Length: 150
Image 1 (tube, rainbow, N blue to C red):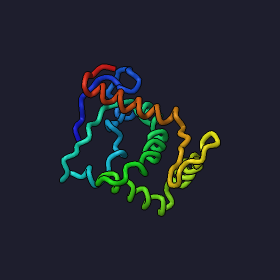
Image 2: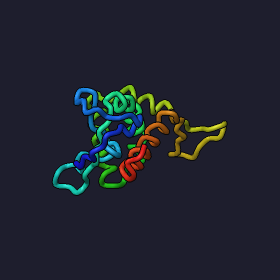
Image 3: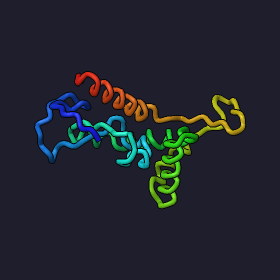
């Protein structure tokens, strides 16, 4: 893991004061998008972290969870995607995220505007504000890493 030393929270733009109780590290991009097996020390992927206000970081927590769970089925077919999918299945079987997963499944539609979709196809009514919020956070984080500008 690489930590970039900054004096500004990239999430809100306000100064960081070095208060260890009020600040923490945020992974850019979010850690949960990469399979744990790819984040182990023997692998080459090193996530960068940025210091942020703890409250700013926590305000994205449930939206990042939603974002990740929505994308997991689409990641299958790659080494990382299969590992994330397998972990999600294990977590579900262990009783984790049941309400979130069922909420996402209820957002699926087999017909849109009266048109029946082909077999095996599904329309997903995303919670767009939550999804877009995480996309904007990722872009803001990558931009900040590149330019150190809010």
